[in-house]
Length: 270
Image 1: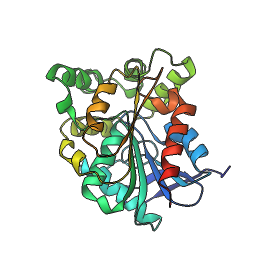
Image 2: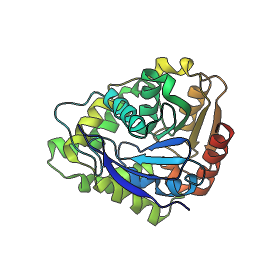
Image 3: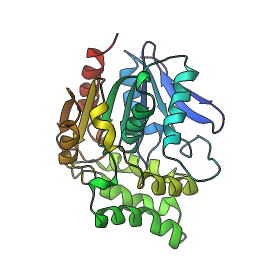
């Protein structure tokens, strides 16, 4: 199994990545409360077949913070720089939750650079939720940090409980809590504000590359019915529901999730 290498690349802001393997590039992107370590099992497993990269998005993990407010499309521009760094024109693009929304944004901006899309536990925008659901999402994450002066480590156990499925182990829950404790407070606040204003609904019918959608049976945030509605608008896509999983599918059901991704990607390699 290839060794995982860690780099900090691409100034303004610099981005931290883990990568391993050779061959076609596959980029894995974490959710709004995660970092690149959420993907370690998939980097190990899939690097037998691909050159796999897992990043810390700007303002996350070991990547740099940045000045000013966040334009959500900045993530897609950063992803383009990752492809440039490795000298490739096209990549397999995969993302969970916010990472899936970055994937949609990247496709909208750079369709010629996408070989396949894997959209995991994600949605197109907060127009999919009621005003009350959207406000609950914001209040849970921002109110303690902005109005009550708390640190991210204070909200991590509470937010993680809302994301993890009922069949998750204590170790899987703690892995999610630990990743959330590494959030950069100010960058996280900017990301939550930007993501709730961003929408990619218009992109779905334009997707013309092989696309995989994966949802957790017990995901209370991105319910499988949201994924099914997306799948109905993406021509020829594959849709999967993974049983006994909440929002963090790749952590909660890593073997089944990785098998589904591997089978999909190998069909479209070359």
